[in-house]
Image (cartoon, rainbow, N blue to C red; front, top):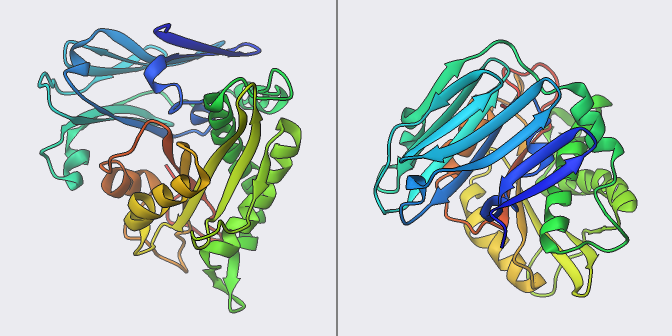
Length: 326
């Protein structure tokens, strides 16, 4: 197996360490801010290798590991984590926004709430992903033919398209349609209603990229929010389960730890996406965290998951908002 997988879309090039290929996609780098995280085992950080590199004319974002440290670089600015040389399990996180980059390593024995204390950041010039990078992702079909080459290709495509759905929703001001519970525009709808709204947007991408979005319940599983079905070359149908919760849901961790795995088993798939609907505004000041990135680090980041399960936040906040998703 090659050490790196390379994906090319026009002038955009993404190189990813093979073991992380299902966890990183082009769309992770299209928003102005983002987080990539994973768990490391058995002295993995003692290696010297590149985790990923996204390159586009005039723009590069790269992460590496070397001698027990994680390094992140955006164009000419660098930051590195504290050193971790143990053989135990640790959490690794890399974040960026318009004026900083950051990375951190947290040993498993440290409490989840302390991840922020392990993040090291450096200020950078104001930087946003080139608009052409986003346009490139939109205009290039991610399929080579009518069937997906493998399940990882399908999974990466779904991740990309979910990010595009958020951009579509916010571009047209349609986030307001996820609000209005009991005709009160200051409160968001319930999760199943929001999920059908999001699934409708995702379906338009499915029509162009040959996957089907289904909102029907699975026998014996309760109500899975929605799931994806698509043909895999020489392997029948591939499936991706999607479970979603509001950011302030008391069942957030339960949904990730229990419900999503159960849906994946009943669907017969190893691939799953956990969506978090970020709805915080001046009229709906929940949850207590200021940004989705903070919520991710505090509640979801420490939770164990296979590399074929991803967490994604969708910003559906409406009206004056104290913070947008980081």
